[in-house]
Image (tube, rainbow, N blue to C red; front, top):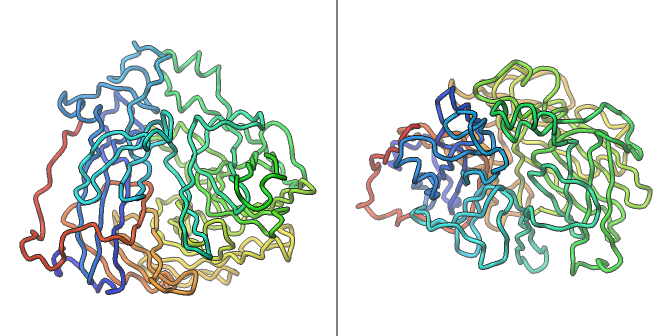
Amino acid sequence: MDVTQIEGSIPEELEGTYFRNGPGLQVNHAAYERHPFDGDGCLISLAIKNGKAFFRNKYIQTPKFVEEQAAGKLLYRSAFCKGAADGSPFFNPLDLDFKSVANTGVLHWAGRVMALWEGGLPFDLDPSTLATKGETDLDGQIGRRLSGHYRITTDPETGVKSLITFAAETSHTLFVPITFVHDMVVTDSYYILVLGPLEFDMKRFVTEYIWGQSSIAQCLKYTGKGNTKCLNYTGKGSTKILLYPRPGRPGSEQRKPQRFETEPFFPFHHVNAFDVDSDATKLVIDTIGWDKVDFNISAFDMSLDMYVGSKRPEYRRLVVDLESGCVQHKKLTTKTMEFPTMNSAYTARRHRYSYFIGVKDCLVSPAQLLMKVDADPEIGLTTPLSEVGPDAAKVDQFTLERRQVGPDAAKVDQYTLERRQFPGEPMFVPRKNGTAEDDGWIADIMIFNAQRIADGPLATIHLPHTIPSSFHGHFTGTYLGPDPEDKSIPTWAPPTYVNQI
């Protein structure tokens, strides 16, 4: 990027490459009624070094994307597709081999970059050019699909990193039907799945799906039933917590898979989890829980119900006592937020800080805030969650219109993003040799001091085009751009356009 395209200055210490993946190509045709989640994956890359930035983005060239681009029309069904690919009701409803859109996550690991989508295999990409190499099963280590989410743990003594993820082929012995799970967390002792109360609606499948009136995703029905008890809550409609011992960890031979239940909510994304003690008899799970989830909502069917009343994602803490079976469950803020990230060096360890996107004071609003949450790891341990107030976690927000909001326990400093500007998942980048958990930056096309979010961006990179909405990202300390001192690198190359189907 030319210096004239950078407002402010990029910290000289900040070096590496930021990747982010998301549904870039949307189908703008009401007859097809494609959900935003069905958009073909578009990967962005921002390589930063010596206070300079190099940006590129490319669509992931899955075989079916290439075929549809050549044909200039939809040829394949997707998870939110109603009926045939072209919107007609004549199709094989038992054919669930959906098009891989490769649009959910991205991972830089062992020198390779992979685009992730939980319905299929990862796609290998060239780390420097983003050119698509093809599907990969990681040298036979995975089966037919891999999750769009993962956790990377860091050994605090050796610094060795481990990649932990899951797939649909994963077997377990808790005899709990897993209808849909999007994310996972780990502690030093356990792998953890948190299952929201979803059931497959067979009635809708028979009366609507097979006639092309709903998608297979819309056959997922939320069955949560309100209950405020936190002690041994069981029954239909509960949220289930499944713990699986991590092999090779101290004491793992004496542990067994366990199941716990709590009052209903649905989690798409988790913050973190950690063991409270070395015996792993109690653990903490921080997550973003929705009071309700509805897979009917799309660009073609949007109502105010998305924003008011229920369906609000909020920061929740679960404290699981493995000996008593009690699960304490509490919302730590009254703010609406999603897409959590944190300092990945604290994965599976006690953490305090996390970062989110959120909405402003009114509920009828898209996400236009960058938020930092300060949640003391002792909340729910030294004091029972039942005695914790509604704003126990402190929230530091960034909008672009500075003003103080209310005398809450959560002190909020706001600044409103400009019209038609929306934040993506905030990516925490640790400062090299930093000692504090929050010593680093939030890096995207806006770069913030992670310790002082409300101060606004240190640098804003102005691109000559918009960036499609996206889901999840990854930062590597490896610089994967051209030589920043090479004068032959153009400041801007005309984009290669794709067909709008």
